[in-house]
Length: 262
Image 1 (cartoon, one colour):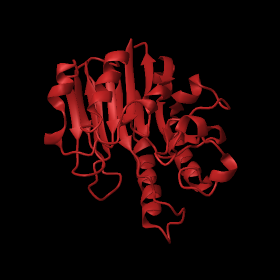
Image 2 (cartoon, helix red, strand yellow):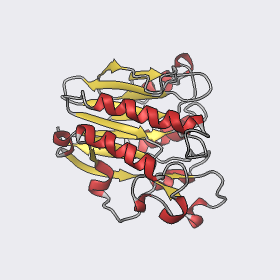
Image 3 (cartoon, one colour):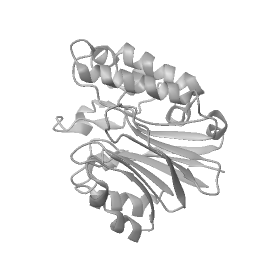
Image 4 (tube, one colour):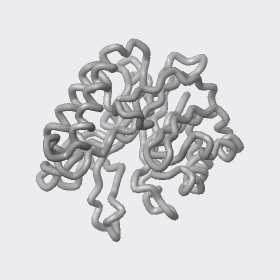
């Protein structure tokens, strides 16, 4: 059995105590972090190694962005794709040594506030990022798990109000269609929705702007774990840890975890 978790941590140094809390309680074999917000030499490598996660692949950047994959199992870094095409650290790919499994860790751009590439450069960059991912997906030939903050909630049940968010970046029809093309390019299986089936409520992000996130519950499912078809058949469980949104100094995202029988 192998378990893989993903979490947009929104600054790994600031939130190291809750990362350690999560690792103690849930003990995933592999943890993929997004938005680590630090350069490689500032990543808390030693603290995580002391917890048993001594195998690490870090693609950091000063200030914003950045992804890292840490593991109790031996991993080998195999790729860093610049799907943003501007040098931002938003992807790292590893293989689990001795297992026929690749884990791709990605942080898709948020896309700004206006869903129009003519009026909002960031929205165009997000769509172009997804198109580059789609061209890459055409070349995937190994059992692959792609995880991370996709910054898109594709299904109506992935948001607190489909009607009110149709023109809000992260749930617009154009973004959903673009993400679907990526999914179809390799035939990825949405593991979250295999185990928590539509139309059941499934959120992974709640804005900091909400004074009482649990009471208002205006969430969105922005974080995903998708697998190649054969690998998806080996998934035995998937769960989220919604209570992590209430931990001290929380991320606005919560962790997801999937277990596989390899």
